[in-house]
Length: 393
Image 1: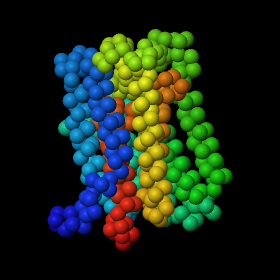
Image 2: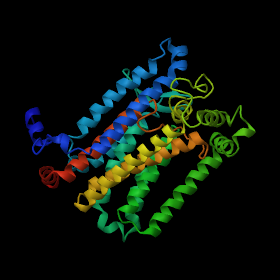
Image 3: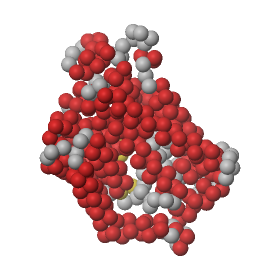
């Protein structure tokens, strides 16, 4: 198929005010605000470390800026991918996810950083495979739920078969190890299975099984158990197991109502580890204060709300694949933001999850932007008759 023909078949319609009038503008504005604020905070939080390691205080900011631009391109490209194409190629997405998760465990292919083999070095940049793999698995699961929706409510084995694929992927991620990514994937998947019509008894059984498995992993893993006990009372060992959390709490407490001022953080001066990644929210609270922190929480709440609205509209129109995928994306973003902020505030154990669309990390930012693009595509198909007709063809 030529490029011209492809564009004619899949281009976003320009009639009736053009595509700009059809996009979900609240979702667009929320996403752009989070990305822009993330860039500002990455620049501020990473300066001391970037200057010490590279001699360029804007090293991490410049890289994050490049990934932000690539992420916007990824979101734009996602607008041109019909939902039916994703639904029909779900098995390929699932297979690709498993291949990536296996490749990263192969010595010489996967790159190990701080004891974790989560990255594949593509020379130009490193890809954290759990990010695209989780999205690919949600695409597969959405298609699976559409195909077996009628039997899901009467046959528990249908839900079990879906979970088994995710369990295999979860085991591979745990071998990296990446406990946080596994937990978020399972929560999103279980929520999707429940809203797709699984019986509540099946859902509760699967939920309990996952909870017991996660608890067992924490209990039998010394470093996870140390993190958990350190979270319960970080001040009992503030210079070892409780170091990250105590420094994070000091950063948040120092911010008061309006913060110390942009760039004035004390904790980023080699006190708080991972200040520009996992603990970016703590630096934001320290420099911009309580009101800015609340605003960030509200932005994430708004993003998740828009995803759920898009899912509800798709379900009302009988576009179940779009509904399940939009719902899964919303749950993923919401749970990951909740966990990251909870870790920063000391209400959850340290998990190593980034703050969506804001923390430093190219793979996470690219995938998050692509997910927003898929949400925008789903809403376009909700709103535009011609796209709805193409999607059902």
